[in-house]
Image (cartoon, rainbow, N blue to C red):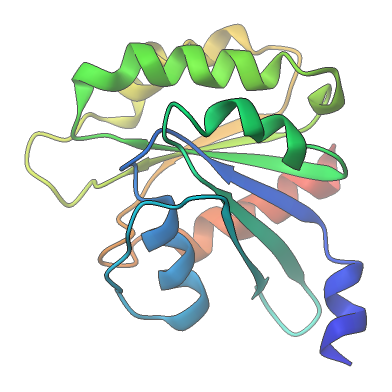
Amino acid sequence: MGQARSSNCPQVILMGLDSAGKSTLLARLLTGQAMETSPTVGFNVGTLDLDKKTALTVWDVGGQKSMRPNWRFYLDDCKAVVFVVDSSDPSRMVEAQKALKKVLSDERLRGVPLMVLANKKDLPNSMTIREVSKQLDLPTYSDRLWEIQACSALQGLGLQQAFMSVHKLIKRS
């Protein structure tokens, strides 16, 4: 029964630069615990049950520079993009902005909603969501539904709410 259900769950792609916290975030969502993770080579995937009737299949794809050209292989049937940034590392925001712009330019993502997660908000000096939004040029994406939320994958803060919002964005798109 679980298998049949996961096949009709909306597909969500979790992407972002390496060390943004994508795998930690997915592990936290699926197990409820913080786990040690190592850099993702390839992908991790899991079905996230949001409530009794709602689930999402979440694909966490590796974010190292050498892996980013492979992101395009995960875009078929994608219903939402969740882009994770390390909000405590302003030095990589330009790189993140370029990576996001490149992936969103793919024809298959036309009209697909975007959720940006400003991760690591538990760390001192992490950027505000307004600063992250500006750095990533989010206001220029007027042709797509998008939201930004702060979270902490390690502490589990804001994750459940963020993925409930992702589900709502999918329903609205």
